[in-house]
Image (cartoon, rainbow, N blue to C red; front, side, top):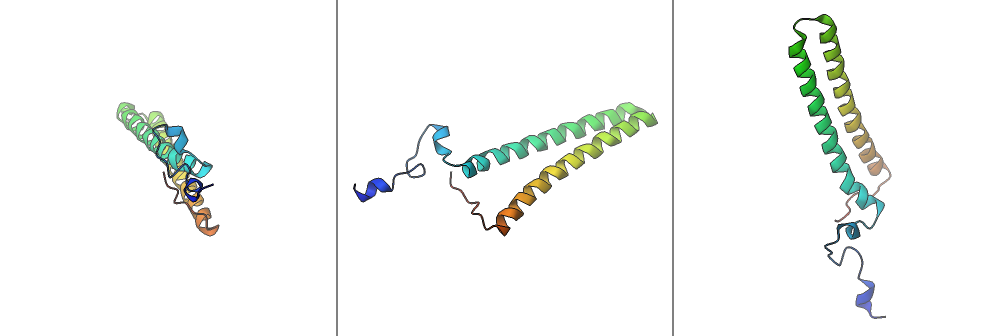
Amino acid sequence: MPQYLSQINATTIPTLFPPAKIASFAILLNVLIPIIFSGAALVFLVMMLYAGFNLVRAQGDPEKFKKTQEIMKYSVVGLVVVIASYLAVKLLAIILKVDTKVPL
């Protein structure tokens, strides 16, 4: 077998078929994680806008104001959990010396 044939793999041959670019689980995660974080940020934004709208509609009612505060609190806690999980994964990758630079 000629030497140049052994150099052919998923990263050396460009393809127009997107699933063919996902050759490993690490590449799949590198594609999915930004999508998941964008979704989490979008959910956070929607929840904060909803809470702000409810705050305006509360009109001084302490019960509605308390409910709005809980919505804001839990949306911030959810965003913090998402960011903390990302940082924990990155920290584990550094500790375990995992190569996170996967070409697409």
